[in-house]
Image 1 (spheres, rainbow, N blue to C red):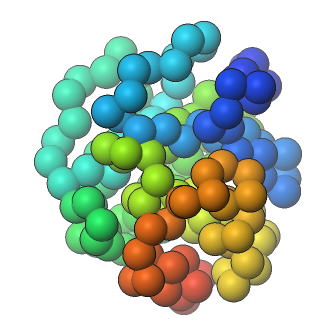
Image 2 (spheres, rainbow, N blue to C red):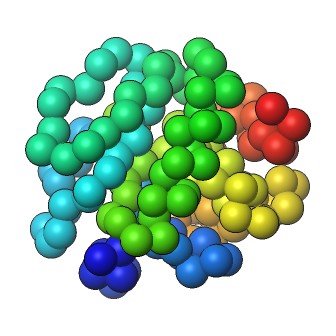
Length: 144
């Protein structure tokens, strides 16, 4: 099922293990095609309800997650589920928090922490992971 994500439409990251995860900004319309079966929403306030299973991680814009260990656990779950489900990671604009989470997932999938931001910028959005503290969070992620 995860293989039916439209990789031509952008927003899809292929991790070294081969799993696919869609990143996006929630301020943009829902992309055409299949909907996620599981999503992680990285926002300062509770997102509106969706028709699929979703987790909310409290994370304000341009900042860091309120509970880093919660982020680690939720992203581990998302990566595991991406092996057989359509998984989406999203924040308001789809770059800073989403890019940071995708880079952390890359670390979980075996990308060295010091190369994870570059990996996500190449495969997702060249402006992903917007702030110095988000980059530092990725580099230190495996030590949480």
